[in-house]
Length: 252
Image (cartoon, rainbow, N blue to C red; front, top):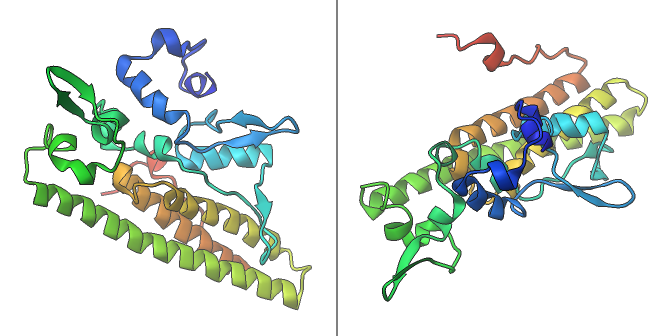
């Protein structure tokens, strides 16, 4: 309800207002999501009140002051992503096209005269003919190559992002060892918190970029930027302001 309220939909009733395809997605989205246990009663909470993007989720956590643990090396109050497949899927072309999780991961098959969902839940790449070729009229080799290209490129970006976070973490630890009173340490730790969560969001999401390839690339690039900003802060340099293309408009 809070997520729908953020979109301007008041008093949303999922049982009455969700479409059949949305309900099919929500079945999977009960578990394949980012979540945390809120308060002393450990209430299961989805951090969606500001939206489903990783930026919105990070903004929610920042507004509540939530942290999953304090980083042992740097002392930063960091977050640990769970498995946000639902959130990443919602940023991709399949969600925009009305394709539900089961359409790809549990494609229809025939059992005698009956048409049923395949309950051998698995990667669509292991069942391209029924999972992909019902919509995409290309060869299995072409479709598999497309998936491989996306995942290989995302994996390369993921490695760069994680390396950048690690470099920042070690830089903070080195500065703390030299002088723990430097004000820039707090700013660098905040950048680490952001960079680590964004990189981990893609790492913990199990499609390696395929559910929303452009979003995955954007998130990892932003993670790298946060890490570099943290390193600049430690050097006493003022990072340039963060721009928002959605607000500024695309510059061509």
